Length: 311
Image (cartoon, rainbow, N blue to C red):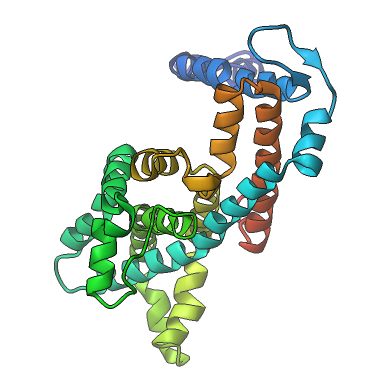
């Protein structure tokens, strides 16, 4: 005899109201950590940006004076902005090289994993260790190892990579060498995920060679490309360790001679921990955050990532 529930609607309603507690129990430590060490400090720093605070005396509210000083009166701030823009401009070059390397490695008939490992290896090393290595190469100015090597392959003698003229270019180049690896791995995974049937269908319409790359491969890599652009752009604003290590060990001065390698994050570090101007440093940090947010929104819009995100 089959027993029929007297209240099937009520039973279904109670089933729907059942809340999955266990997943949130496992997520709770990470959520608490994110709130305590990320969310609260962000809002606390935002409040500090409107004050004059030096860790010793109580914070004094100054309104938008910190922002006004950075934008209107600080030549050092705009020098850091100009140097940071060079790192941002270098992002497309790094992406193009990473994408080209991914194409070449994926086209190899054998040894793809080996070449991918070799190409990625500099990125797997510690940024501090790489900074020490780069600093060693440019130490002793015109008598450095790199200067001698450059002279042997045809460049002018006496190149000084510890001087104001070449230091920033050297740090940019070292950053490109250590930043190509992650982009290459991501692009390689994206290329392997493209359905070969697209290329077979494209051949029927004459889409071969560069046409297949332009009309099939790149559109299929659209979201991957957008991700690499956004993460690379954010990383270009956050350059710090390489500048600090190479500048201190290679040139004897933090961030290069005559502030030739000073960017926004080192400027924030210097104002906060060298001069105890925490309010001013927080204001610079939020100015940088605003620029990153605007550039991210633009990248997502022109990368056509909104449709894939359900917008």
